[in-house]
Length: 267
Image 1 (cartoon, rainbow, N blue to C red):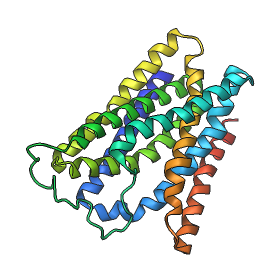
Image 2 (cartoon, rainbow, N blue to C red):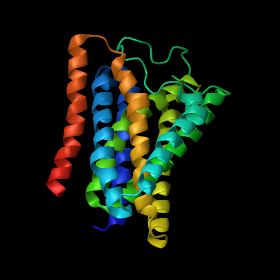
Image 3 (cartoon, helix red, strand yellow):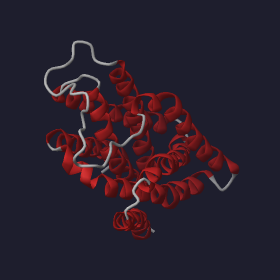
């Protein structure tokens, strides 16, 4: 398959995985809430491993060892800080709901039946922020497949694992803001499909502008490390139970190990 076909298939797969996670939450929130800490740990490991073992080495190989790669990497890291601080922060608060399986996922009772007449403004902010995030994810997947299939696979896995807990949180925000479960699911699907637009942009521009796809790799690496360091790892540290902490550490290293195995198989 061509890089374009692989990228489109990958982004559709990510959207499908995210939808499965959200449907699970809508039917039985306790199921995913119990598994969320381990899933977050695995995602953190894959994000770190994907950035350090795939994206940055491919970027250095394509762009050279000069300072350009590291400036783009720094731009991706700081860029996601700005986006989260001034856009996503205002509607997410924190990405992940409490991991207590007995906690009420909809404390206001909104959205469990019919839609509220006037949904909370947080719904619009959530949809805008999530759409922008999915657009960037799609561009990252498209650029990675244009450079190297292994980088594309690693990027897809990292984004897919991060999307499940993120979409879980987004779904909760939409329902909490006044949407019914059915409409919240619909808007999550439509927001996820924005990633297809991101892939299309990356493929079209990448075919016409030399170095575009390669330049997106260190930017994506910076964003991956920011998400892992600022969002996922602090969430891991919230849990003080020793047995759970050991399991989370194991899953974090497992995530890094998966990306290492992929790297060694390709090279």
